[in-house]
Image (cartoon, rainbow, N blue to C red):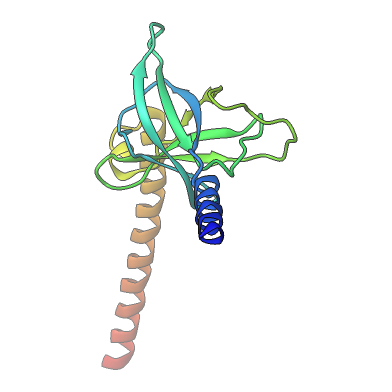
Amino acid sequence: MLYRKLIIITILSVLIISCKKPTKYYILVNDATGLTKWTEVNANGVKIGELKKLGLRSDGKVWCLLYIDNQIKIPKGTKFYIEPSGLLGNKNIRVELINNDVYYLPNDTIATAEIIQRGLLESLTMDSTKRAQLDSLGGVMLESFVKIVETLAADSIKIDSAHSH
């Protein structure tokens, strides 16, 4: 009986130790559009945590409480990016871990996250400079296309003339 209790206690201890709570960190963002509770936090394409809570500070910034896998340490200097994750405006949080032997502590406010706008819907609202650059590129491509079509048409006429004689 004592042996059985010892085995049960050992198994429970291992389960409790392996099921540690995630580590909590905070990041700040200027705009939380598209972020929701359960938004994924990824590093190198692997989910390492999720967003648990959002709130507005008195200075207008939004604080985000992240739950990160307790085995992942966040080195100081790590960058956070808010990126599109689909066509509907949803976002994810990408973590760019750096090599550093100094780590943030649980509950630290880590950084202000940079917002990356690369999604389809975001491209519709791009600033006028980017739109002008794309229009310019589109114009160059259209000119090249017209020249190719004109050349093909001229060559086709030459071929037709050669066959008719």
